[in-house]
Structure formats: structure tokens, C-alpha cells
Length: 93
Figure 1 (tube, helix red, strand yellow):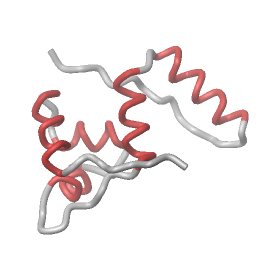
Figure 2 (cartoon, helix red, strand yellow):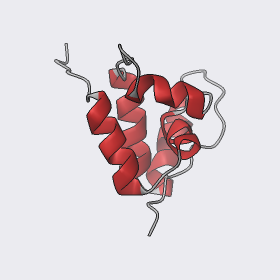
Figure 3 (cartoon, helix red, strand yellow):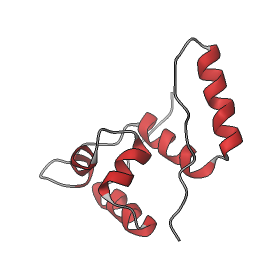
Figure 4 (cartoon, helix red, strand yellow):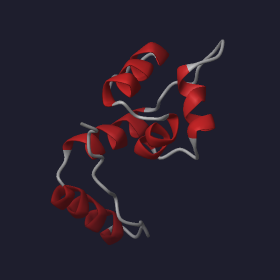
């Protein structure tokens, strides 16, 4: 079992600022419905916690090459999933 403590709302807001992303871009990075959903992880009295799976997906998109992401997608399809292209998330300059 993996021990996991999620990033805080402040950590996630700091990442958003470092990347120079909009809420919509962060939502896309994590694969949530939109900026309104993303804000649930970064604000309010009781912000949601980002799950291990969501953080892993986000980190993979930020770290792996397009080819590596395609290999993961191919494995997912081999396991029976239908999944669209997983695009590498490029850092804004």
C-alpha cells in the first residue's frame, strides 16, 4: 500500500501560479470538468483533496514524453479500456 498525503490547497495554487495557468488549464491538466471543479481543490472552507490517482495523472502529463504517454495509453487499451489520446502538458514560457 502506498502512503500518501495530498498536496494542500496552497500547494496546488502555488503550482498553478508557477505554471502561469488559468483554472481551466489546471482542470484540463488534472482531468476535471472545468475551472469551477478545479477551484474546489484550491479554495473554500474545506477544499477537496487531490487523490493519489489524480496527482499521478497530473505528474505523468507534466513529466513523461508524448511517446511514453502513448505507451501508457496502449497498455490501458490492452487492459480493455477505451481512452482518447493523453497529451503531454507543456509548460508555459
